Length: 197
Ligand code: FES
Image (cartoon, rainbow, N blue to C red; front, side, top):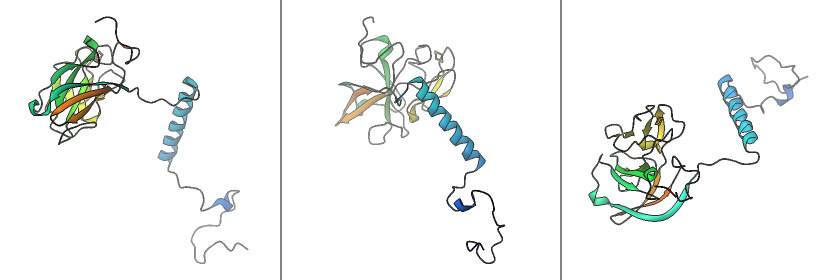
């Protein structure tokens, strides 16, 4: 006799081979099951590309460089600066967005900086900032547009990666650039100083 069935229970008795595991199996919906399968497949594919390695976004730290004064910034008006090299591909915009942003500094966490070379094929994005939407772009070649409140992720267009974000520090009224959070277009390695320019 099965003593595990509660008196008055309306559930039919389970005579399947997994009946003894009842209560231990998590309840997974079809949607969750498909998602879990896709995630597992992605990890396996990644492991095949670079066995034994987990990939992280490339991030490089450089000597910090003073780039602006907090008191001089105007909301929605980009300040252009070169970092970490005096090179056309290392041209960046420092912008007070007027909305909190990932990686933002300042009293309102809304001051960010991004490289302005489109990571797709290198179109210059300097001058394309849209203050009403805190977006950079659209790119003049393939219309990629980037959300500067969310670490420069691509929101439309052909690019497959976001804009490299410049990490910032605030010390008193001084704003410093301290690093670059993704590969700059045209570089094999951010830390390898360009020989042209
Ligand atoms: S170069 Fe910018 S989307 Fe292609």
